[in-house]
Length: 332
Image (cartoon, rainbow, N blue to C red):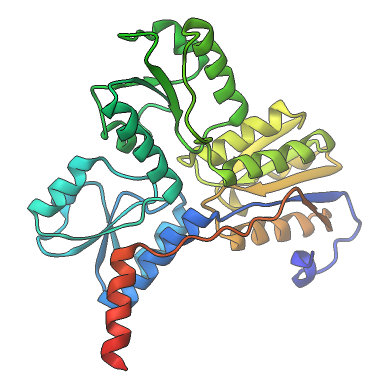
């Protein structure tokens, strides 16, 4: 790796950095950010975005600088304007509200979240009780629950299983938020299955491939380090989970940092090896800045540890693709 090449060599090398791969942007985040960028290029500023397009302050500020306006609800968007729905997904009522205000909507919901929405509708149509494993108040959970609120019970970790009740223990299924810790989710599932032996599982894993891959890469590195740094924002569920995974997997200490300025140099005391990764909504430039910060303090032996290769990509939302295609044809 070449990140530290732009800094002066440290007076003496203090240690090494193990850089996790994969890290940073997943396909769903890349799609969502590109959606706002293309919308600004095509429709012009302002383009409104309901909620943070992804949970990363750097990304939000960069898009704001280009003319994106982030709002909490549709009623903050002027009638007839363009609004992008975030990668976390929205409830059906949000689409209805947008239609009532004649908003042009572009849905940047991650396709893997959309899959969970489809599963909710399918099981609700068969009148199942759906036990949704996730964190209360998270935007993805709010959007997913809105698909069938009368059928869904939120289960926020294994400790809440004792409070769960269902109408028919023979018609119950679990689904999950896509950005959870794999291990904690399965602990919750095990506790639910002990209580409801006929509990059904989703047809395919709900925790997204990127979340699982980043956690798996952290697990490989964590036992080898005294300090693990995860670059990400505090409201990013998958980033917070990576810190928890690092500690559980053997890192002596682990911290979530928004960027290099959030690192406390005292954390390096007695440290020989630092683990470094980033959440699925984090641009690579922030990881480079942390790597450079570490190199300037003697941690200039950077080794990338690869767990798996990611090649998945998602097409832009169909509404945007249609308008971009029409513009190309008109200009031909």
